Length: 179
Image 1 (cartoon, rainbow, N blue to C red):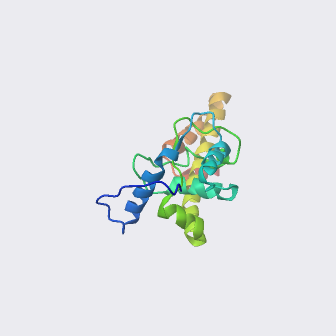
Image 2: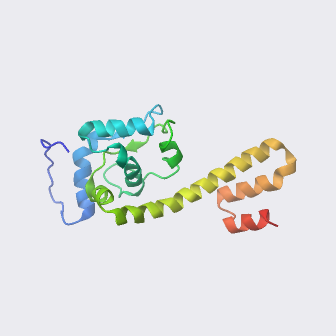
Image 3: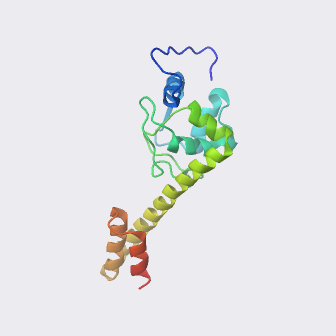
């Protein structure tokens, strides 16, 4: 962080982690990046690292984990794995336009960087969301393929649509496919 930066903290109870998150977010909010649709994950991470060398290559996955699990602070919004998919972050593809990616800061960031168990717990929780996302992408690919192949696969297409809309569970879909 910039050592010459002064933050005024009136009526903030510093004992609360959320208050600390808010204070630190306010201190670095001008370093946030809003994607323009022509920026890759690598470019975003290099831009963040250029500010204070706080995001070396080894912490890029931790930064993504932080973005997806951090508490909501100031004008930030919660990002989902659909907006920041792991495959996209591991490729050279462009991030969607309009993503607000704050500069890493706060107690949650420091714990993710320094505490392996804390990082593992949050990573495990995120892995479940990513598995659901991958199933949804798979169902969408099947739906698109089957709709293009004509009326012979209408049942499978409708099953994929039911999975995407949450009207059928994975177990029900497995049961149908294996019957």
